[in-house]
Image (cartoon, rainbow, N blue to C red; front, side, top):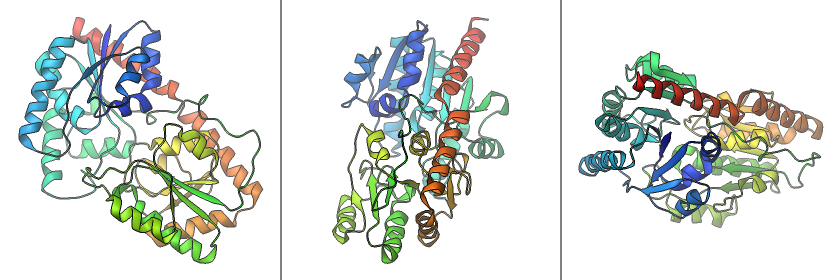
Length: 372
């Protein structure tokens, strides 16, 4: 069977869908990655995929979006996949339409709603209408948390019968493993792993770090993630440099080896405004790290209050700082216990085998329906 995977960056496919790709290849399927060309496109080919470049512009220009539908339609007619798997907003919306035109069954994955449901403006209104129109077409729609699924059903954006909830993207428990022995850092290290976006809560993390360091000047607060100035929610590099000049946070840039950075942290923080199921929290949980995250859809699926971490109010630096101070007050045994609870949650609820098995079943189901 030929299976196409369509995402807005090759980087995303390589970093978040590689386990699924390997499982599909092991089952004897042919996998075609369809995405804009970037530094990771070649690595997808090395992993065993065929790669077809498709340009996807950022932003919401109607003309470029119409061109994207046509581009994807032509690609699907050329590649002739038996099923296409869509991820991220533009492939989910425009890819679903293109797949319908091409007569190819599609499986969509709503892995997070971005700024569409965070901000209420003209653009978000258009996005809602586009979701409602395009989501008539997929044979299956996966969500990464129940909150997002309920929101789509409440707004009548999708039929309940084709929806299902996955445990995020899952996590490879053999790749992300705890340290053999717990050791508390001196000084204590808080780490935030996220793209440098406003709606990831980066500003709140910087402000909270400043409040914490007023009481504990030696504490380290680190930020790991790509600057994305082109995003609607992107923080300008100039603003990031201003923060760095104060010495409140340390910026670690971006890396392919996230695990080695998480390994050196005492606590992983994600004050995001809304998520699907955040990959960074799953990675940290699998590595037995205590967590602090906002009490919002996606984050609260991973963090259990006072069990493996703390939930804080979103857009609230003071409450985030309070939770960071609570974490600092824990002794080594309590921190280690929280970390063990994180690992247990990752093992029992977020093993990527759960996600892979759901996809294998869904692919078999939707392709069987086409043959009938």
